Structures are given as C-alpha cells and as structure tokens.
Amino acid sequence: MRKLIFVLLAALGLLGRPARAQAPPASRASAASVLLANLFTTYWEDRARLFPLAAMAQGDNRYNDRLPNDQTQAFRQQQQRLYRRYLNDLLNIDRARLPAEDKLSYDIFQYEMRTRLDGLKLNTWMMPLDPFFSVPNTLAQLGTGTGAQPFRTVRDYDNWLARVGRFPAWADSAVANFRLGMKAAVVLPRVVVQRMVPQLQAQVTADVIRSPFYGPALHFPPGFPDADKVRLAAAYQQAIATDLVPTYRRLADFLQNEYLPQTRSSTGLSDVPGGADMYRYDVRLMTTTDRTPDAIYQTGLAEVKRIRAEMEAIRKRVGYRGSLTGFFNYLDSNPRFSPYQTPEQVLNAFRGIQARVAPNLARLFGRVPRSPFEIRETEKFREASAVAEYNRGAPDGSRPGIFYVPIADASKFNVTSGMESLFLHEAIPGHHYQISLQQENTSLPKFRRFAVYPAFSEGWGLYCESLGRELGLYADPYQRMGALGDEMHRALRLVVDVGLHAKGLTPEQAIAYLMANEPISEAAATAEVERYLALPGQALAYKVGALKMSELRARYEKQLGAKFNLRAFHDEILAGGAMPLAILERRMDAWAGRQR
Image (cartoon, rainbow, N blue to C red; front, top):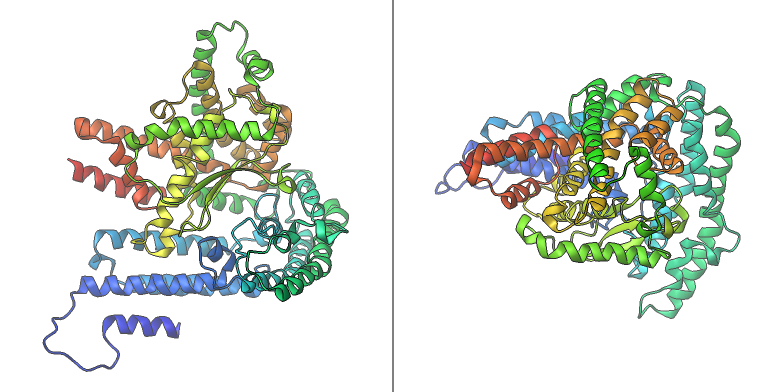
C-alpha cells in the first residue's frame, strides 16, 4: 500500500519538489488518467508476484523459481486484501474526468476486482483439483521443456529446480483442503476423481531418466558448460526421485484410497452445501452476464431446435431417407469420411485447412498477429482427458501459439465431424488471432493485455466458426454438417450444464440427450458430461458469447447498411482485448455511432 500511495502522490505532484511557475497546471482529466495508469501498473506488479505461473505464461520470467502455495488460507486472505485495496483505490479516482478509453479500462478493472472478491467468499477451495486445470497437470506440461517454462540458461534450469522443490508443500495443503471438504460434504463427483487418478499415476516412474521431467536434462542448449550439465543432470534426477515422483504418488494414493470412497455419486453442484451459490457464481463468471441459469437453459432449448432444423434440411438435401440419428450414424460409420490412419495424417489435415483459410483472411481482418503459430499433437500423459485446445504464445514471439490436438486414434477423426470449424475456433482466426493481438497490443494496460474472459474468448472462437464459408471452407453439405454439429454441441451445453448443476439432470440423461441431438459416440458424450461436472459453468461461455457477437453484427449491418464494413467490425472487436460482454456492447455501440 505504501508503494501505491507513493506512486499516486507522485502522479498528482503532491510530493515535495521545486515548483516551476512556467509549467501549466495539469487538467483534472490528465491527473485522473495518470492516477489510473499508475494504479494499473502497481497492480500488475503485485499480481505477477502473487501468481508467478500466470506471469511466466505472459512472458514475465522474473519469478520463475516460485510456486506459491495457493491452497492456504493465508494465500486466500492475501488475495482478498489485494483486490479490496485496489478496488478502493480505483473508486477514489473520478471516473467522470477520464477519457473514453480510460473509462473502459476503469469499468473492466472494477468488474474484475468485484468478481474476484465474490469468488473468494465461496468454499470451492475445498475441491482444489480437477482433471483439466491444476498445478500437477501444469507442472507436468512445463517440466518437459517444451512449454512456457524457459530452459535456455543455467539460471532457467535452477529456477525450475526451485519451483518443483515447493511442489510437495503445495500438495500437502491440497490434501488438507480435500480433507476439510470431506468433513463439510463439499466433495467432487466420483467420476471426476476417477479421471484424475490415472493422470497423477502417469508421472510415477521408477526410472527417473524416462520421466518427462528429465527432458530438459536430455536437451541442454548449445554452449552449456560441461560442469553445469553434470551438476544439473544429477540435480534433476534427485528432484524427480525425491520431490516429484513421491508427491504425485502421494496425491494419487490419497485420491484413490482415502478420498474416492467419500466422493458423491450425485453429480451437480446443487447437491453440495452452498452449491447453488457456487453455480450462480460460476454462471456469472463464465458468461460475464447476470442471466439466470434458467434463462440460459431456455436459450439452449431454442438454439437446439433451430440448429436441428438446419441439420434436417441438410439430411434431406443429400437424399438420406432415414432419421437424423441414423444420418449421424451414417456419417460416423462410412469409411469415405474417415481417411486417417496416423497422427501425422490428422495433423497434416489441419495444416491443409490452414492453407485454405490463409488467402481469404485479409478480406475479413485488417489486424494480423505477429506471433508464430504451430499445430502439435497433445502429450500422451494427458491425452485421455484432453480436448483440442490453444495455448497462447509469448508476447514477444519467442514461443509460438500452439494448437494442441489429442489423437488417441487417428481413424476416429472424421472429415464431417467439424475439423474445419474446430480449426477456425481454436486456431485461426479464433483463439490465435484474438489472444495474440490482445497481448501484442502494448497500448493496453497489462491487466487488459492478458485478461481472460471465457464469454469473450470462447464466444469469439465460436463466432469464428460461422465465418467458414467466407473463409473458403464448408464447401459441401457434409462439411457444413460438421460445422452445424459443432454449433449444436455448444447449444446442447447450455441445456446439459444447467440441467446437471441446477435441474437434477442425471449424467445418464445428459448423455442420452447429447446422443439424440448430435453425432457423438457414447464414450465421447460421457467424457463431455464429465467435463461439465468438473468445470461447472465453463461450457456456457461459448454460446452466450457467440450469440452476443452475432447479435452485434446483425444490429450494425441493419443500422449502417452500406457503411457497415465487416473487416472493420472484426478489427474493432479485437482491438480492445477480452472484456465482459456488457462492456463490449457499449464499446461496439460507440464504434457504430462513429461509423454513421
């Protein structure tokens, strides 16, 4: 706080310094803007120290030796003090005296602080792991040497040793939180925990040389001193044998033997004490709206009906005379639609999609990322529970943005199953454009350059799927059917996510509902339902965000007529970075007003 007050006083010119009569007094608007800018700067510094893994992912490597124990009450209290202090300091700045862009930053920051404070009131810390986003999974990705953790210098290697040396304490605190949750009946569903145990067990190996964590010691950069190579190789073997493998084994054994028998056979958050409040918060967090779960559920039903009608039209168009479910089975079982036998063939198919899209991008986008881009197969240790995803690159371009594709069985990839729409969403122009352009925009304060709002980012990704025809894809009705299948999938999520967590829908009913309305196998539908159980509300972000962006496009096309420029519309959405949907709408309405 003292540092922040010092910066703010300096910004206002209230610290002692010689007066210069010739200098005109600063306007109240500029003083408020300087206050705001300094507040954002000091917040970002405090945030980087508190969340060093996030800082590293955003290119800040100053704290790469740290792994904070975010499982402790002290850490949660530290977060609460941070957010409350910065919210109070923000509210002491006169918003009315700020220019338009600063008002936008003010509003986003206020939303961020209040939302984070609200989240700290909940008991979700009693369920500290999930199969998708967790410290054990993150460390396993970083430790291979091919992720965000740099392994370029001797110091980089030592930083990693220091970081993983703190993992045992983190795991002990996570286990303690699980045990408190067991006493309070705030526990995970059994099916979710059954997914987590094999992930942890995959890191337990008797031969440390074969551990993925030994990868950096097998690939030292050129020019490393021999003495350091010998020292670090021995240190990495020691860390794997004494810190990593025992900790992963301890976590896996605890979940398997102690926690699993206490997990709940029921699934939705409504079955947990305080779960209804947790779910309402998750809905608000993921959609950045105040819409109720029931309202979102009704939107889902309407979207399922609309998309199903489009699917029926394609079924009739191609001359298939059976039911829509029969059509799904036909597309899935016909060998002509499944030409892939190896992972490399699947990766090359996605590279081919990229090549077809590339010539058409300039018509729809004026802003193009500088960051490089790669397509990779997902690592085997997390393949079973992974989905296709985008991992952001480094802001300076030193690490590319990566589109990860899990390929357990290449023959299961079907050209009608939405590979084109998947690429548009996860890669180009979806997440790679949105995230890269945002973090490359140095005119934004850092909390905006690296902001993540799922309704914006996932909404943008799903909206990009609707651009397939304009980008040279969906050339025949079967490919269009694949895109509709992906859109249907997101509409179904509105129904199933809310159904599971707020309306008493059972996993079996949810699986049956998915299979009746989209081309999905029982195994895939089961995996999807387990994802919704592990990440309540997250699946709602896609459709809610995409519907808002499509609504804005339709509104401005009608309002502006011939003055509407689609490329300018896309550039404006991306120019401000991710933000809550209500703030985005105000920003875009102002843009449309300027076009008139």
